[in-house]
Structure formats: C-alpha cells, structure tokens
Length: 127
Image (tube, rainbow, N blue to C red; front, side, top):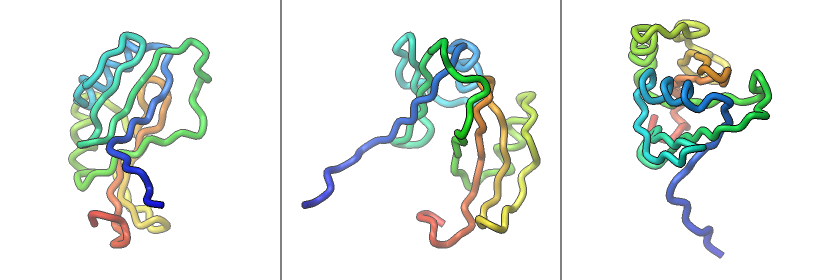
C-alpha cells in the first residue's frame, strides 16, 4: 500500500498572551499571518510549513522540551536581523561539530526556544 500524500505541515504551540506573541512573530520575525482564527493565529514559515499559536490559560511556564528550528542558509543574516530588532539571542552563531550544524538560539516572549540553523551534513536534503 502506498502512503497517502501529505501536502502541508502545521505545528501548534500554546500561549497565554496571543497579542504579545503576534507582535513578536509578525513584527520581529516578519512571518506572514495566513489565518487569524481569533483564539489561534497561523504563520507561514516556509512554502508549505506553518506555525500556529493558540491562546490557552493553562500553559506551563516556562515551556519544557520544545525547540522550534528554522532551517536557513542565512544564519548570520538572521542573527543580524534579530539583533537590529532589539533581540538578545542566547549566543552568537556557532558551529556545533557533534551535529555538523551552524546555529544560534533565541527565546520568544513565551519562553519557547527558537533555533536558527544551517545543516552542514551533506546527507541532509537540500545541502
């Protein structure tokens, strides 16, 4: 049996403050808002990859065990873009030889860890 198709991907995360989250993702990261459902907002990350945030009062603080990774060939440019917008990444971009990646981390207003990463492993699709 052939696997049925998958055409898009959406990751949903919870937030206590949807307005503050919207400002960060729309203005700081400049992600396009593709759907506003009032209690949830969905942003385009890449062609068919999306990130959604839904308002929920019982969200654990700080969030645990979640890293949302943005894969980009422009890690240094993202670092400069975010610093110019007043953000304070956890570290400057650096090579992680264990995983053969170049990356840095930043926390969003909810405490979620965001990673901006370039795969350097030729086995990764698109390298």
